[in-house]
Length: 326
Length: 265
Image 1 (cartoon, rainbow over the protein chains, first blue to last red):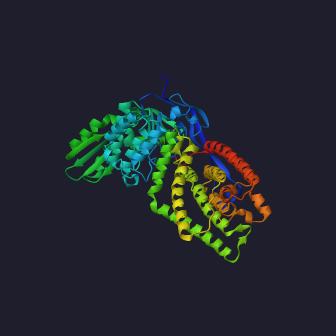
Image 2 (cartoon, chains in turn purple, green):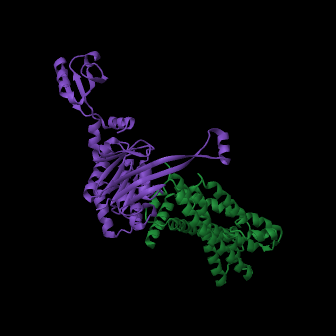
Image 3 (cartoon, rainbow over the protein chains, first blue to last red):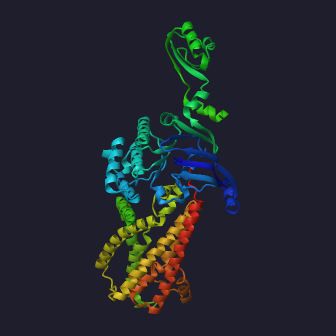
């Protein structure tokens, strides 16, 4: 079976107008404009199969959203080949549009002044969903998201978390096979974030939907995706299992320890690199293959109240990837 | 297929009813404007019976009909497209199987229907209170031509506003140009006075531009005093401008979408 999403040597360059600061700069820019080129996406290639849930990671301006927009047919590519479900997205054919959805955490499609229900009805007509299917999907999704009781309330009166849930329903009414989720958890509190993650995971499993997810929260990526594509300055710097990159960069483990009596920082330096220290509590990095030995020494030399050994935070690993490359 | 745009129409109508205060104030503004123009002309006719070839009753009729036409034509949501482009929510329509122009036209019609139903009530009220000597046109042919010209004018204004709205693909705000057009419309479009009271040469020149066909032309047809030759000429020029503006819409939309590089990253 051919991949659902195929991207080959995709480039997207923008011309950006450069204006000098201040009043005279504005006047000057009326007559003469300097342009410079931004390589938002610079020669990337990847393939995604049916049912895969892939995480797109990268700092702001790395090219994540640009890529999603090209895949959705919102942007023309500068060069390269793009195919989603066998369609060329920028042609924006109806048959294609009925099979994918784009959800942007920072943009909304619901009609702000009306209950979400009205927007659902509108989408039902736009996507030409028949009554039976419409009822079935609404029931299914609103049960999963627990929003049956808020569908008739004006959208502007909902909380951000409730609104995002309704946005999801609106975007999924037509049962798309491909989902592009751009920062779906942005601004949500911890509980709402977790609900959103659970939903995405469940949806992926239930419908075997192909999903690309971008997020600033490593938690989203870590809990949802096996495969990640790390992108920086328009280039892909890693494409593979999240697990592998974590292992590769986990050259150390993190020991967190509480002491029964106060200790000196100096005493701990023979154990490993002390990252945090408060006399009764310390966080120490130790080399990966000496974890057992070093923690044994710690237990012998000090009165330890509690001790845990952890893998390094995924944020740290990604930071390391960006600073040193893969 | 049509049910899509019917749904757009319905939801726009509901949306319009949400902002009742806003809408009411908009209508109050229209009524005040109508009263102002009405009384200016009423005063002019206190000392004479005919001005610029118009009798009191024909000019007051003109003012009333122009108010009705204005509510039909100028209540347009087409300019919303500018905001949608600038804030990036145009993305919502572009990813859906939805005709761009048809979408906005449906919203436009909903807004017009809302305004028409109000302006009819207002005009009936004003006529009852002020009892102006207005002309009730009864010739079915003239009424038919009146409805036709008003419908074409509606299309033309939608096209003009849509084109201006699409400027947002290139510039950050399209309100400036629209504001200018609104001013031109009120003056040269015949919103305040019938333009044929201007010097002949000016009137003839204006009649070659699209503007008089939005308010002046249909209102003037209603009065029933326009010679058939001028009616025919008017319809030809009006059709020409509609054709030009529809072609421009397609061209500009195509170019705009090509150039569109949604904000933010």
